[in-house]
Amino acid sequence: MSSVTMYSTPWCGYCKRLKAQMGRESIPYTEVDIEQDPAAAKLVMSVNGGNQTVPTLVFADGTALTNPSLAQVKEKLASAA
Image (cartoon, one colour):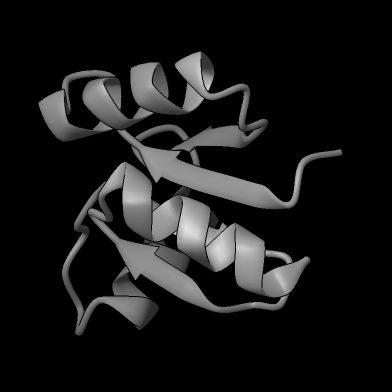
């Protein structure tokens, strides 16, 4: 089980880029398509002021980052370790 959940859509270019970057860095994540999961869409909206902004990453501690850079993801994971 990964400590990061990435909420995304199949057509999101920012999501594709971040998934590729995280893959190259061997950062595991669980992906959830908000277009296929209404509860996930609501969660994304709850942390983004009512907007379905992706990628939204939720970490094991419950905090979220919206459209983060790879550096921000790595920094967050390092601080949680």
